[in-house]
Length: 280
Length: 272
Image 1 (cartoon, rainbow over the protein chains, first blue to last red):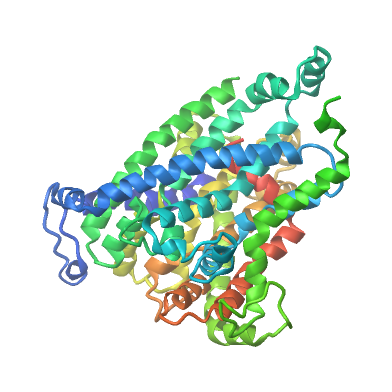
Image 2 (image 1 turned 90 degrees about the vertical axis):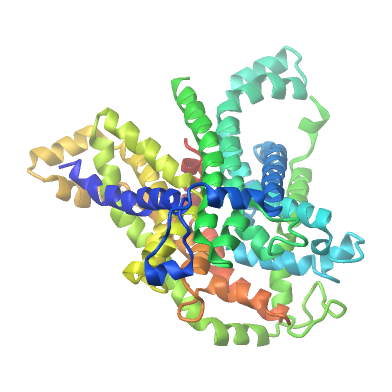
């Protein structure tokens, strides 16, 4: 009877994950375009979709951008998140209120936050003036990518703060006090006691952030549309544009599968890390 | 004592205000600009001169349909996730076999599949079964984000339920369905609310599925409505901001009334 309860969820996962994943693999090996919906014809083309997307100049650039965005975001969110979480795990008036309000950027719909950032950083926008820039950073290829990264960091910091605040609460107080009595300074206590104690949570949340940042798509799409000169294209935006702008569903599927494959590598790392954490 | 430890708590409060100001700077401008219709880069003010609601009226006029669509999608996503996830979570929490590990890893993989990979094949799938441009289609697609999460969250909660309570129900002659509805569900109330809140926010804030699985002309969500505003050649920013404020209201309300549940959910989301 208990197994029967799982059936609806099983069917959902089969239809909405299993089938699409397999269909996407098939689509990446056929010539699937708008006409396919009418004629039903999708001739087998082998690796042609992969070959043609790899031959474009935008895919290598998008791959590098995706890696840069992910690497910088993960490191910055970890450092900033840990700093803010350490700060909020000390006692002071209004602590709970402030850490609650901090969640807001993370909860707002992406479209709303991306819209306001686009406005803040448009020509003559308030933040452009504040930073003494002449034009919108979205008009400059290097600054556009930096802006997308900074906004992405801003979006994810609250998540880290919540996770790490919870982790810091579980650091054994007696160990910290004992080290304090032994004359260990603040930095030494953090390095030798706090950090080893929260390492499992750090490892897990870092891997999760890598996985979530690799598929970054909505943010650059709304902020810059991938421009200027493809400077903010990611694997996600390229896959989107191929399928839903150019209606080359086969090529879109190919890029999507590359993204899925990269994600899977980190997912396996996560499963191993999580299993090790459970053993401890 | 170190200098940092002597730091008066109120100074820390001041530091917290500083962090908050930096983090919420964009949110402040979002609200401020929504009250300043027609303001240009030169005339915009940090503090709105008056609470002019013109942009809000315009946003409601133009986006009422999309807002209602988003609301239907959000409620549907929350309900569908819970209705499918709750029994499955209960079932999995009672089963003891290797099968459970396989399901858990499958659920995790499901959570990490990029939305664009799903969109790509769901579009062709929905095209052939007539789910494109429909609210049920968007609900089914959005559940892909919230259902695996709800299942993992509810299962970890239900594992904690006292065996004796369930055993007593069984001795009283309650079947598995009655046990789930009358005993497990009330005990799991908080976890169910958390799953519902996250399902609602996923459906409400969804942009990618709405953009790819509806054409915008036949069915439009509030997020696509805002995106269309920004993509037009002459952007009326104050109306964009007003619509974005409206889009943000559910999150703000949920943050105020259910912060407890959000924290529980976030903790579960990190694979605790």
